[in-house]
Length: 495
Image (tube, one colour):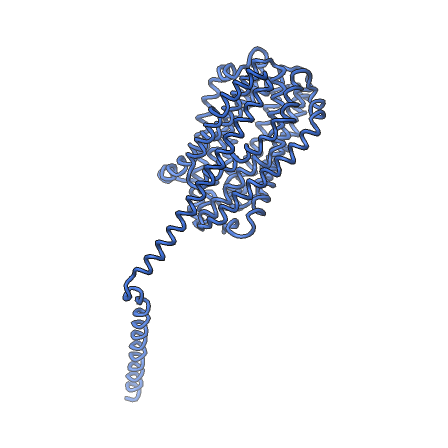
């Protein structure tokens, strides 16, 4: 039997446990991606490092679609669990899995058909474009299975099972770490070897997330067609805005990559290292966005809005403190990062700029993640869509353009950081207003209930007393009837 474990106890503890365990699993995967880049860099060909950077930008689109459907899983199942409607939670879980698979099949199929055009669109050329195309042709078909794995992981977090969710992603990282050197160096498969190792790792994540969701939590019931169609209205209401929300980030990254590409492959190679460095360093923030959702969902289902507000405040506090600590460490170790990846010339300049000035903007990036997770789980998914798309367009294009014009490739990062700060502050303002509205509506609802009780006439208020009096009369009549029956029975026996 499932339990709504997030409606009791310290919200800060729930946040730290869920995001901490989630970040360990995510960090394992991201560290492997970072090691991929390290291995590719060791081959001594800058075009290969640039190829992985270009491919990673496009892969981010596919992954972001899967994240969108996993948000629907977390929001709907956690709310059902919080309301103690476990049958509904199982039915919705199965429907989201089916929906996620089909959406990913459609999206990755379109991407696969237009790989060369997409690479050209983000500025990939020559040998870098060829190697990136080979990488994507291997890894893209596994997208639908990763989508199911991510949805299942969200289901585990909705049930409060942070440990199994962590081990699911951790298993993928272990598999990838073992296979990478074998495929890249042992078989001399280069970027193709890195892609194949990632595919096998994705299937490991799929098994270790879906199996416990079915066997341990009994949280999956595959729907028939009519049930699936009935559930899809609620699923797509969250999933579609969430997909747009999450694809906004890779759109912004694609804009940044394209802007940097015009300054040469060395800058792209340096930015590729940054792209692998960011999720490793800020894994807790990425995990936090997934961890906060179930906590908010369960408390919303249980109508504990005080705990909803407390969860949001604690999430923002964790984001700020963690980011400051990580940025300080990045500043101290930036030279070791540059030496470890063998970066030279322009590649070193862009990495230094990120570690020294740009990384601190992730305080506001984290605020956007928390705000989006809150909107998705508190009934306003369109808010997160508008916020993310606005950040990816108005918060990126003009800032990146002027940054590149004034400061070159490094200015692209500066511009992106400023746009993030602006939309981070905007997201916080909208979030505060939305939570205040939720609390106000709840207070009005309670006030109306009190007013109705006060306005009831005396007869209605004394209904319970009348019912109690009637119950006593009925009980007395029953007792008298029993006495008469007993007397009749004794009389019959005497005769």
